[in-house]
Length: 350
Image (cartoon, rainbow, N blue to C red; front, side, top):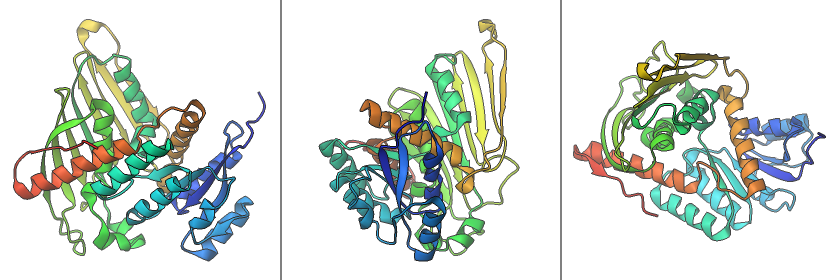
């Protein structure tokens, strides 16, 4: 089979993690090709464009929207810039890939989901946990029925944010961890268990992040509409423990599985099955993810391939704008629970 024709042009806005999309230009099996780059730093974006032989390098994302040979906008800017850029992209007839959490208010999430439906354009939210091989294989065990009925799922995202704050000081006062970071374990729970009915949340501030005005340690208990329960843990003002950043553990009636992944670390998946089923234990080790921004190249490649398939098949990406809205609704209910000291029902109606 010959190389695929490069027929789907991408405009990338934000070239830190956004630079990971450039892998497509060298992938002979992909029809995706980055044709334009945008960054707030002119010198940086021009240097990257020259290195990759890309003739459009700009500091204004609207220059990408004017190009007829760009069909997809890939947005990797700070969270508070996403709404304007996503809405402008959809209004210009472009499909969108946007890094999590898509946007930071429920109202903006509703608007994007509505516009995506009205235009028929596709929106993929880059939730990396869904596209890590370790966790994709856990999901396959669940989908194949190997674990039986799912009773409980626990997810976590642990991250000492002090080095991140040092590199990106805008986050110190702007960052809402329950929206911008807890969206990882919350989305992972929704991936396995579906829509949430109720959330009970606790949080506290950390003395390790003295310049940060909000809580940075979170524990969320979630009740799902299908009867299952789940727990999401997010700790960001911490000394990182001797364990990976992300973990998912699934408990079913036929078996249980635990998997983990950390930036630049080995990943693992271990499963045990009910003794009456007679299946052997399962244990897999995954090589470290060492390429790309924060070691996320593999997950970015996986979700871009998923998005490309959705374009070819005219199917809906997962997670899409509606998924992002529902995860954000859980975070909003979480804040209400934290402030009110009681469980809160989640309003996830668009």
